[in-house]
Every structure is written in C-alpha cells, then in structure tokens.
Image (cartoon, rainbow, N blue to C red):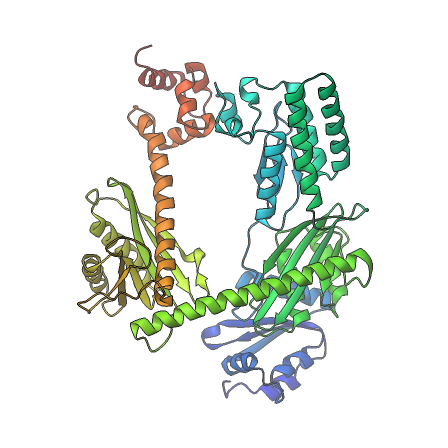
Length: 606
C-alpha cells in the first residue's frame, strides 16, 4: 500500500453510516466499489491485521486513495454501487459478463399462418411471447420439438409469400407447407392453438383433444391420420414426462443459488414461470473480495440491469440485507419484488435444485480448468518456456479458389478461448489464392492495433502452416516491431491424419513431432481447429452475400443499399427473380424506371 495513504487515520474519520466506498490505484484506476451498512466498519475490515486473505492483501497493497459517498439508506447505497459497477466495471468487482437478452419463443399471431421461432430483443413485434428461457439450449429444444410435433412454419413472411413449392422443412417433416396450400387455414389455426396451449402449460387439454381426434379418425378408417395423431400424442407425453419440476399453482419465481468461495463462485439461475421450471443457467462471477452474501447481492442487482425480475426472488445463501435489495429491485422493476429464502415445501426444493446445479457447474468448470491447465503446462514444456503463456493467438485463411478470402484470428487465455477478442479480416487487393499475401495483410492490420496499444500482445503466435508461412509471418512481425515474438507453425503429417502434426519453431531447422498422445499437441490442435472453424464460418457468410448480390451488381442505378433492401424485402435472390415490376416498385427506394430496368436485366427474354 502507498505509504502516503494513512489507512488508520482515514478509517477513523469515516462515519458509521450507510454508503459506498471507491478504492483507487495508481493513475486513478478504480479498483473496487463496495457498499456498506457502516462505512467505518466495512472499510476498516480491509486493513484489519487479522485479515490475511491473499486477494485482499493484493488489493490493499495497490490502494492509493479511497473515496466515500454517504447515502440515506442501505437501499440507496445498493443502487449507487450497482450504477458505479455498471459504468466503470472495476477489475476486483463482481462482473456479470453475459449481457445478452433472454431468448423467448415467439408466435407471430398477426399473420394468417403464424410463424414459430426463437426470438431475442425488444418485444415490439405483434404476437405471443413465451419465456424467458435462462438457457438458450432450452428454448431451441422447445421450438425444435414444437416444429416436429405441430409443424408450424419458421420462415420469414417475405420468403413465405414467394414460395411456389414446398421447401426442405416440409420434406423433413417440420412444416405443413401452408405457403403452397398443403394445409387449410382452419387446420393450421388449430395446430397454432395447440402450440400456444402447450407453451401456456395446458398440456392435459391438448392431450385429450388429440386422443379424441385419433379415435374419431380410426372409426372413420382414416388410419394414416390416426397414426399421425398418435405420434403427436406420444411426443407430447414424452416431453411432459421429462419436465423438471411443476407446481399446482400459477406462480412466477426467479431462483438464485451461489456456491464456492471468493474468486471461484458459481451462481445457478432458475426461472419458474406458471409453476414450471424453464431450466437453469450457470454464471461464474469474478468476485475476488466479496463474501458469498455480498457477491450474490451484487450479482442479482447486475443480473436485473437488463431483465425484468419476477414478483418473488428466492436466494441462497440468505442475505442479511434482503430488505434493501427488495426495495431496490422494486424501484427498478416498477412492481413489488420480494427477495427472501424459503424454508419449506416446493419452494425450498427449487432452492435445492438451483444449489445442486451450481455445485455441479463448479465441479465441471474445475475439471475443465484442470484439463486446460495440464495442456498449457505440456505446451510450455514442449517449447521450453519458463512461464505458462497467458495469451496465445492463432491465424488461419479460408477461401474458395481464391474468392471471398477471409482471415481469422482467435485468442486463447488461461481458461480457454476468449471469444469476445476473436476477429475476422476481409482480405482485399491480394492475388487470388495467395495465402501468404492474405496472412501478411491480416497480420499487418492486427499488429498495427497492438502496436498502438489498443490490444494486448500475445505471448505466442500460432500459424496454420509450415516453414514457408513462418518465414512470411516473421517478415511481417519484424516490419511491425514484433520480431522477438515467439512464433510456432503447425503443419499436417504425411497422411494428414490428426496426431501426426508437426510443430515448426521459429529459429529451429527441424520440425518437432510430439505424437498423438502429447497433451501439448492437443492444445495446439484445439487452438488451430478453432481458428479454422472461425475462418470457414466467415468465408461462407461472405461467399453467400457475394452470390446473392453478384447478379444484381451489374444493374445500372442499383447500389449496395438498394440491393440489400431488395434481398431483405423478398427474402433472398430467388424471391427477387420471381417478382414482377409492380412488386419491385414496392421496395423502398425503387421507382418505376429502376424497377423496369431491374426486371428487364433479370428477364432478358420477356
């Protein structure tokens, strides 16, 4: 700790009142924000000689100054802490990193043939929304089941309007093809009602109706119809038998359970809607200084920064300041929110389920970390490194016969992939098929930003390739001032089979062959394969856009904005090709003259 900061005198000057404290390091960096029922007692606990927690000692050693804000109540302190953490994201605080909105199941009831799909974002479009689902896999599994069972469409309205024959979804049994009249509006509306009933939890009513229709079809000797209804009924009952927990009451509850210790917490979040659990999602807040109740309260506040809380929020462990948290969430939500820990009955079972999931998630994470750590250690040993590399980057190139070239850069840290730091580069001005030139351009663009201090430099740079790629990359790095960066190439073996890869270390004449059992090679394979996957995904998207727009690029007066508007309006190039002049005129920015010009270019024989 800075000797100029007199902790004892500062603590003695603090009031025993609620408030927020902010700890600053060198250059004014905000290290930590905390709230306190008593500022003197809470801040003083950091400097207590008996507080020997290593991570606390690391923080205390960096403190240059502390600022406090006195608040009228604990609730005000909690809200202020939440706002400061959200704005400044101090490195020692609980940070909820996943800021995505929850997915919903959306039925677009404004259309004569409603669409069933997964939806994220603001619920502004007409229709029915069901959820939210805490786990994306749960909502996708639900929609997949409903498509297979009741065969509602999932295509966009523009695509639907321009179909002339059934699509692949119909052929694989996931759509009844209302676009071409293979199902009546009445029957489709009935299937839509079944979907809504299932999503609302009225499964028994759907079961009874399906069973009745099946019996009637059998009496009429319509055995194919009866068999289809039988399959629908069996699928519905199978899903019902696998439901996690259900209650007899219509109740909406959010359940939070935290397990672990400072720096290694796991939080399981379970959403209960209409008495039915929608599954759990796990989070791992990096709360290196907080005790469990403090970490959980901070996590809950951040969690509801973009989400609407239920009227009841169950938490474990119990929070000593649950009342201020209830008041704070009530203010954010606009309706009464009660935060408490149930002690008996079904609600306690929900808590136990969330605790079990949090504990399991923590065990899985620990096992994964151990596996990653073992591979990192083996990798460092293979390269003869004195320390484990904290940051590894890997580049790869993807193209089709030299067209739509894309370079990828993936980043791996101590715990595995750092996906938010992945980048793709659209390669331009390079001879088609020149992988060396494409790689050189991507490196120049990436490492110019590293040299400017915008991105952290890696400890090791992996390249998918052999000696030729290594030489090219070394030239680019030297030009950019990174000539000392450790460079490793990975090339395929003689049979191009996994396990035969060779490692080319910059400066060594002979390649190394670690062997299929090498943990170091497994780590390299994982990073290389991720770079390859990321490059291919970007290339395919670029190629598809290029294909859709290439036919339209040669038309005079049709710029990029109008081409995008056309493709968006008609759902793709096939829809544009089928449109008449009158339909083309309806697209934003298209006049009669341009619509006629476009039509004539697409239909020269008409």
